[in-house]
Amino acid sequence: LLPPASDAEILNVFGKLDYQLSNDVRKLYSLAGGFQDSYMDRLWSWWSLDRIREENKIRRPSFVWFADYLLNSHLYCFHYENPDVSSVYIDCYAQSKSHPPDCLIAASVTEFFQKYLKSPDEVEAWVLDAV
Image 1 (cartoon, rainbow, N blue to C red):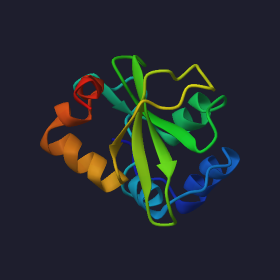
Image 2: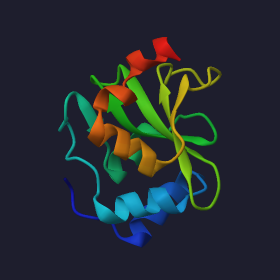
Image 3: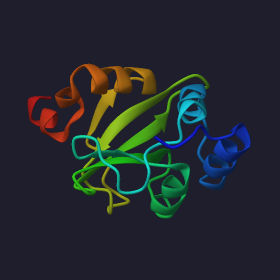
């Protein structure tokens, strides 16, 4: 894991993306800065702030990609819900500005990481077939 990011770094990255930052996203990156580039855990990669900035140059409004699975076969994105919480979606159509992300996978960042740590299969794209 990368070291925690400063509040100024977090605000700078999400501010430049014009993304309304929730407290759970801010807390996440203040605890750890994501994975080193190209590092994966079970084919899943949690992005650094630098990678978030780079990968989100073209994105859908109100969604920010923050992780990928199997070298971008699908992406995970934050969606601002309120000042405290951003939900997490799976996005299999990342290159399409008009296609919405596929599926709400967790109602909050905390719920997403709890699911990932307890049972990673619950947050993978193949769960979309069951939804």
